[in-house]
Length: 214
Length: 274
Image (cartoon, rainbow over all chains, first blue to last red; front, side):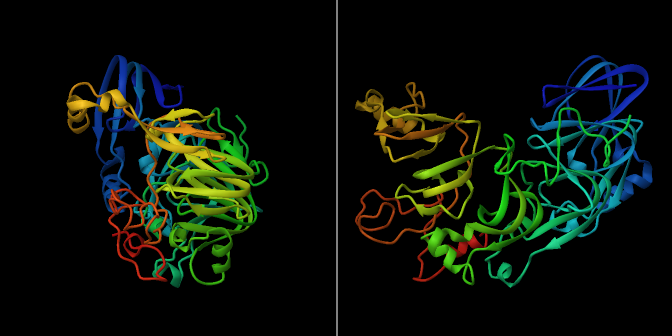
């Protein structure tokens, strides 16, 4: 079983014990390793032909490699902060670009998220990670974890959204009005509203989104 | 392993909810939480999440017009600002830069326009006569970003232009050049070509007088924000005729000045992102 730990806040160290021990990691994110490692590009996120076609169609492309071997492998991506989640059978929704590394025992897939993606340029879909094992997420700056309870829904800027888990419904909220059209927009025209019970990961930075200009 | 509702939490992270988010304080060095009850001004696109009932309005004509008069004094750069109105907890962040809040007690603080994130409407925001800077006057809280932590130093001090965030209580800022490096033929060659051992530290901002100077711990500049046009008057820095050596640009480096009709709101070009 691969062991994940953080080396500081921006480097992930994964210890592999050989045999069938494997992790899936973002293509090109290896920065160093000791021992024997093999890297194999997985087309379509390692989800087979169907997954490959789905990812191609949904624009939620995952450039993933499979890492096998014995030793310690270090991963990092553009000095982004990393958060480690140990899943025990739950499902985690995460933006494909924010997923650094997962245990090979975790299943990844794509799911429809509704209109949120439209404002984001990331497509209408998000990646799901499901099963038992470690997953490492990338965030620009340390993530802020916000709890949603039935009485307190949460609104998130699409550019700052990273991931969510739990029993959450998301809806798309728009503040576009005639003033947006004449250039008097608020810059906060689109939000994702989360209702239900769960956790939302937000990064202290915004990706460039189409909606961010409005 | 038992988990709180919502599933497992990454090690070393704290989960916040609407009640446990700090009120008017940093969540971590990169995110700031405002407990909103009424109005706040934000720079466009700095809100990352919120709980509660909050509306965002672009500033322009309409019912917020009076607010501009009382808090902005310059309608010309108001297009970059948003009014958040309502009740709830509002999270602010800016490209994972360090974020800090500052309390002004009947004081004044001048800050680089791109670094200012949000402020309490009790403060009033004015254009500084130093191009690219804004001045906040009054009593209240504001939030500013910096690349790396902010350090407070007392004048007299010389500061690298890229490390300057702002200054409070009006010390007098001026340019300072390293005389030996600029003198003579070699000085000219150095200045023009960088040949002959330029250290890159020949020019500083010098502050004298009573007050505080804010510097950031890196030389990475934040994106410049337009601070609005200044009146085309003799004697106004960056304001056109009567100021020899003026390059005709201000408010955003390198953005050519577009002739403006009186009464026009903001820079049309910038407005449409051209």
